[in-house]
Every structure is written in C-alpha cells, then in structure tokens.
Image (cartoon, rainbow, N blue to C red; front, side, top):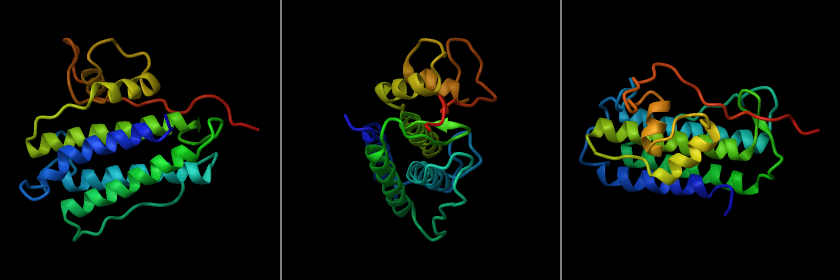
Length: 194
C-alpha cells in the first residue's frame, strides 16, 4: 500500500457523496455546525490538502509555507470539487514520494503518516459538515476513521470509529459524553532527522 492510498480513498468517498448534489442543493447554506457555507467548506478542504502537499514538498522545519489557495468566487460547487480533487491528488502524490523518515512542520516535526492522517481527517470531517448542511445522511467510513484515530487521537475511547472521530472533533456526543467544545490533534511526533 502506498502512503497516499488513504487520502485517495477518502477523496473518492467524499466525491461519491457530494458530486451528485452539486446542482440540486443550495451550497450557500452553513456546513453543519460551521459558520462557513458548504461551498466555502469544500474550498477549505482543498486549501488544507494543498497546504499539506506543500509542506511535504518543501520540508520546512519551523513554519507553514506562506501560501493560501484561493478558489475564485464565481466557481460553482462542481468546479470547487474539481479543485478538491486536484489538491487531494497532489497530496497523495507527495505522500507516495515521501520517504518514511521525512519530517515537515506541523506544530513540530510531522512524518508522512501524520500528514496522510490529517488529509484524511480534513476530507472526512468536512465532507460530514457539508452533507449535514445539504441535508444528506452520511457517516464517514469506519476503516478510514480508524486510520485517523490511530494516528491523531490514539487515546480516545473505544466505540464505533466514525462516532468517536466525530466526538473527538466536536461534531457529536458519544455514549452519554457531551459534545467537545475544544479539541486538537497531535500530528507532530519524534525528532527532526539530522
């Protein structure tokens, strides 16, 4: 299995649920609990995936690259998803090319597996936000959620992986535990290679 395969799978899952609804739903409504619209949330997915690919390519040690992805305001939802596709494939390609000992900045030294887990998380979680906003019943696949949990939230409780991931990120309750109001994942680990 290549490093980028989980990102490719998450991208395919996201596109499968969102693409059929680019013309029949209002993408200007809020995405779930977010203040962003569904369209802007999709653009955010693309931004993060591209940023992670850039970090892997440039390998900075102390900061994020000073770049932002701007999706033109006139881009319709289908066009925005094309940008998400491009950014996701760029991240997957960068992950495939990354040696296991590569480290790049994400609040410290982060390995390729950490960037893959963050890419999958951003894709799944924001797809969930968008489907919630569009009124589409959808839950992220358990296997991909487990991949994210194992790398970014290893100490969290045992339960259905999708429910745990949504709870870990403030998107739901879990077995009587209230929704989290703040959270963060820990992708950085280890030391910088010499």
